[in-house]
Image 1 (cartoon, rainbow, N blue to C red):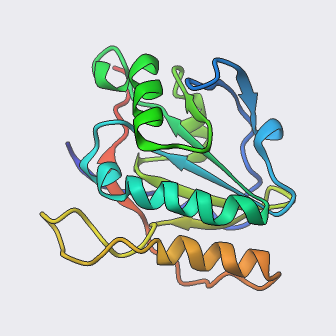
Image 2: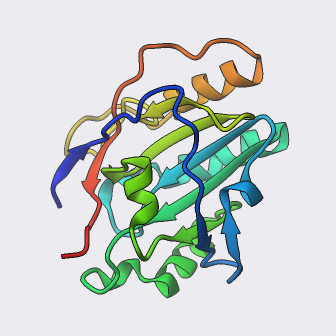
Image 3: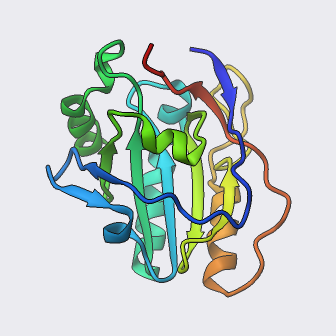
Length: 187
């Protein structure tokens, strides 16, 4: 595991469009299928990263809190499943079910979607408004796995961005990069 910060795609970027298989339903889903007229959260995660495992329950809670308000959530894994079989589509489906995901968990085998989003780590978060314009990117909150700091997982940064978008307010310009395991790129 190499601790990596997110690259912070520029605010105002239009959401890169993708079509990827959902490991839960088996369907091919696109950004246009998944987008919301209010806000869409795109999360790059994986099954085994300690940073993802640290926030996994809060991701489920965030989705349950904001999906009824019209926010769409989608998780994507772009890790090389040949070198990291714990991140295979079959394992992703089990992980999603055991974690209680209420959102699609897509597999980016080509890693083209991760490159388009300039994703660098897991977890890496992006929030787009109804026009698919990037309004927030960065960390979930200031917590880290116990090896780094003891702060509780609250989702405060992402929650603040979503609340601002839903209230038609500006999202704070103070946005911190996410930090986690590097995406496992193919050789």
